[in-house]
Length: 338
Image 1 (cartoon, rainbow, N blue to C red):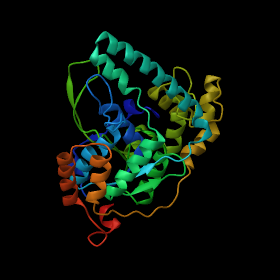
Image 2: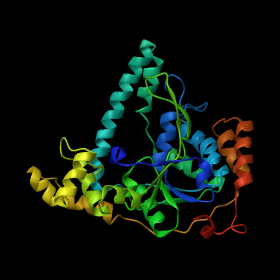
Image 3: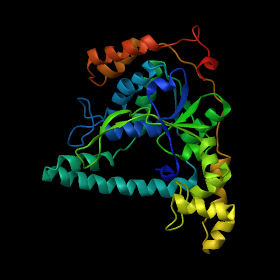
């Protein structure tokens, strides 16, 4: 889930058109999990092919990713590497949540409560190594560049944005700001009309842009202090202080200046706090070179239609949109799209 800064941040809402001509370094795992969560049948069952293999992630790539590429956005999908050891607690906790949600989903299906079943099913999503391989193969066939991060994908995406390789980092989590992304873009892959969980209410989900300099200016803190606020609240790499949310963490850091004095004022300690600070302020990243290629139509058809029984007409329609937007190296340079 990452650090929740929603109560302190005022994003700029816009449309896909606002990011036309921009390179966005997208946290691939974050986006694939979004696809796995929301692209489901009414009872929460994920999309599957004739062999019972989940295809929601592939559906998201071909039908949603190509949609915002048609708008002129140039994505780079950044995949997670080895997680920091301090993330083990969060990974284990997420597994427990998924197992509980799986039981509750079965119960809701048996009771015939489809809205509840779908809500619970969205919490059960698992991204396997096989799915990651399928996603990377499809992206390669589509001509979309991918990057293998040495560790956290969000850290690599943020670093690429900070270095000018991309305009922004794309993720649903605010952690990108703590990792130093000058611009965070949310909701790119899930924009559109959405039903609120457990309510017969629909809302328009719009892309949002959040600028780090504006966040720091509004809160009157430095990036280092923003990281300290995150540690107080709790991150993927540490447990926070009970009862400390966004507003209280901001007040503490404003009053005491940094994490150490703030913790002293509360008479508590956070194990490994300095290590967590380094994860955010000195993350593992690597230099990359990326290029976009025209899609390989036959490879895409083989992967989706031949291997997973997708509708050929729908895949061809998506490819037509993508081919109209595709750029090869003879047409553009990376500098044009940053």
